[in-house]
Amino acid sequence: MDERRRIDMEGNVKVLVVDDHTIVRQGLRAILEAQSGFVVVGEAENGREAVKKAQELVPDVVLMDIAMPILNGLEATRQIKKLLPDTKVLALTMYNDEEYVFQILKAGASGYLIKETATTELIKAIHSVNGGNPFFSPIISRKIMESYLKEDEEKKTRGETDKLTNREKEVLQLIAEGYTNNEIGNLMNISVKTVETHRAHIMSKLDIHDVAGLIKYAIRKGLVVLDTGQ
Image 1 (cartoon, one colour):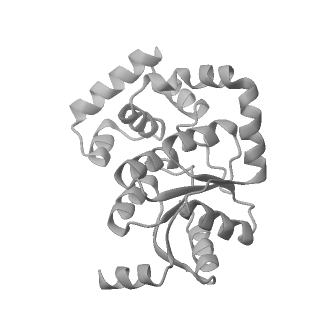
Image 2: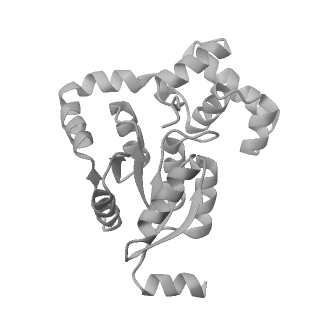
């Protein structure tokens, strides 16, 4: 507690780095720790760990990847913002797909950066969202502007996914990632019977009645992102 109070008094921005690639996390830590005014309070390699560490460390800003196992960055962002409304989330990802942009903004993120971002832009973005202002990579800003021209189409694209509760979306991601009912129950701290109930509701709502179909649906809707290793 004394250490945290000392950091706050010095005016440093406390950052939690979330990415499933160790080399990316280490690189971001090195970049931030080479700058004055920042302290990396922790790292997380998946969304569920990010939620847990955010609660423990109460960072000012979370640098959040989207494509992660167990719990993706979209759902992790939603949970963190619900638990810690004052913590800002800045998406940092290789994906510039419009649907991912809007999903994570809807979840509560304050900005969206592409991983090719220069160090100066990253630093500027963190300061911006920490100060309560949004920040987007130029290509993302253009996509946001263009989206106004097809707002009705965007609503239709997301309509089916919106039939699912947030809990059902979590279960769907884990099903698509190949976890068994027992494993899902353990990860989510719920009974196998509850998992089976969620699975039945998902299949009924989506009118999809096999796992292969659920996997294709989850990928198409951005609940599971195909990780190309970049």
